[in-house]
Image (cartoon, rainbow, N blue to C red; front, side):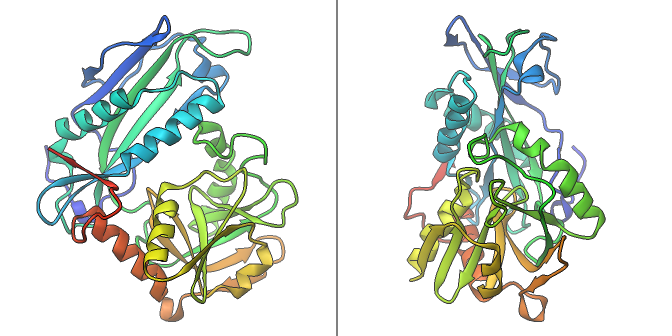
Length: 339
């Protein structure tokens, strides 16, 4: 293995030594298999290729201050993956299988877990796909569950530094009664064009509005949105938003430091009332937002004094990272220590 520049890792695919796979046939899951191949062989009529039977997760393992390896909120990722599976009629993954698969991948690729203090982590990607052939629009009878991992840096190249985002109205990420609330590939496919355009225009990502009325904030690109107003943590409520495990955790930490938490529809105009705003998710953790520009009207909302993240966003970010890396006790039971 060549020397890895841990401090300058991008958020991208990184080849490691092993992944694990399990197959669903005849109504049941088989045994977990270890593989060193980066390729998947499947039928050309597999439902994941034709009808979008695909769901995935993202979670992280950290090397702590004490040298121990910690996985953050694995049970919540398992629950969310199975919610996605139910949403598009795929076979659900038992907890025992999910748990074993994730731990096996982390242990087999332990040398790729970044050292403590480098600002990086081991990103773990569970994947569930329909592999059984169908030509008619119906669910498959066979599935593959696969988990791979690789070291990553921050999702946005700026790291924990303020980014710019753009409100878009000519594209929607997901319909209110569609699949926006589950983690399936189609939602991300719908975001590719506006996200690429935003990157070309100098923005880190886009802020999507609700597809029904275009009045309320939905997702912040691939992450959840939150705003700080006085002593209140505000985050949008919508049937088309993917419930972020990071957002859920930040809400708990906000309450711990004495803040109020509001989960409700957030009108676009309310952007003018926030003291701080940000995007949050497993990949980004927290990305503070310094400005949001409406693409249609060019009206802007600006935050971050002296181009620095706000005081509360910084406090929440540091507190969450401290739990993930073993600097603070895990009183919530969020951490799995890899033995």
